[in-house]
Length: 348
Image 1 (cartoon, rainbow, N blue to C red):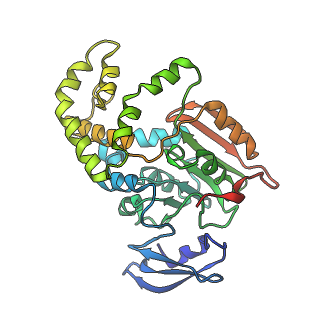
Image 2: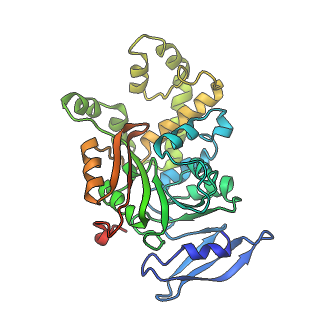
Image 3: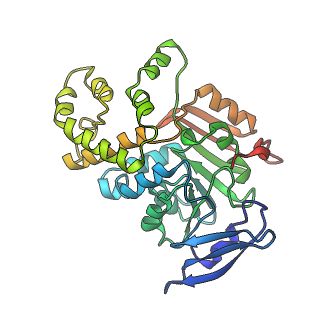
């Protein structure tokens, strides 16, 4: 962070301004370490490795911190040679390519692949994550003058209300303790008339979809690995993927049912979809996605009707909530005037 970035932050407890004390600077005038101290309640928030930290070091998102430090660049377009991250960001937002003069908030950055896309618009981007994934993000995007990366809890964000022109939250909501509370905590940080984009895993109504979820190998296995630490689980995912890879390649060739069998075997195989990737990169993606499926503490898909109801509940306008890229995509605009919100009893 730079010293000037303090203007964007407040104490998450009392919403008072912060002062930077005990700061150490790099040669590029970035704050390497220090303390952000609340001017009212005197609460301290450390700056560690140039990243302001507003949350406890140990939290429910630890697995994601491990995941994205391990795969800091795997999903970046520049690494894969594909445009998957660009296409998803453009599909789910979709916003103009030139947003100079605007403020964008990213809630849940992961490794920072979408941070990079938002920064390319020229807007000032504040990117936050609850996990140590912020360190992977900083390694890739921390050099950008229009990017501030912080570690914080989305239920208690360190920003003044109505501060941002645009807010996006991709790949996050389903992995929070309460998807509903997480969703309604977002829109108060938007300026009136400004834009929000989110996505969430979906579940479809009906007996057959319920049955398929009930017999899903992912959810079945998670009952037995819930207490496994991330490092041990990752090693298992890597061994499992590499041992079954030759078999999965053969099974995938079976018409109609091959990919389904592989899913039951917990092998993530993208060989048919991503023929331009090398064999080793396909395995890398397979290990990453298997760990991503098995490791979250929370995994709560939602019905389309439920997400639409929540958009109405907080009073968003010009809403567009549909099945999309990552399950359910939702976009809306905060109306002028006071936005209805249920955030008084936020989770911490």
